[in-house]
Length: 167
Length: 114
Image (tube, rainbow over all chains, first blue to last red):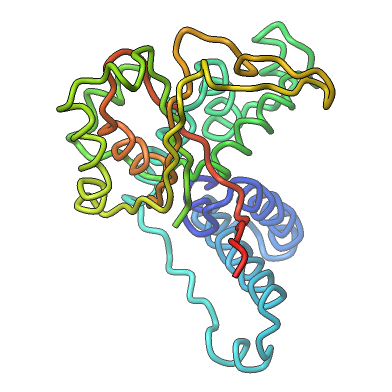
């Protein structure tokens, strides 16, 4: 889910927020309407739609473009995520988290947090460091991904031998 | 496109660099352009023996600020699609004994007067 959402936002923090919002919405909606047939797909769609909306809001704020024009024109059509796309997205996220430009420790911690969804305190415990230390390490790694423009992509086959030395 | 400073750390003094390495430096912008990147700026530094450091705003010393075996020989700024692209471009830098370091740049411009 997170992986599919990052593809829309290209920003890990924004994606995490959208996913959390989707869970909140699920708690509300599912209590009334029951659990949908494909809860995972439902959550992913809501998260991506939320992320798209947030993105557009931010862009509008930044450029102060005419609100009305944008709102009328592009109603985002979050397409139903097909089953094949999800593993791909997840793989992309793994490659981002495990980019050789990040330290090995950061790679493992980020992957546990973002791909496996392990909570920060649990990761901290596994690494025998305090929760604050681990939180700082994760924040630093996410900051580097954003600042250095570490790509959110599966490397081309030609670059694989080099890339796989650290993965 | 994001910009990166590529810092060249080299053990060999600039005067000792073989001519083919110097030529490779001259050809680098062209080769980077062929790979879809762009060299935005470049600085070639005189050797560290010519450096003067000011420490704490007071003390003046006849040495570079950080003394290392690999000395900072030059810096150039490239524009690339992302870090992987930038790494591929920076890898083409001719190095005899040393390496390069990439740093993403903060979006900030210094303009010359006039």
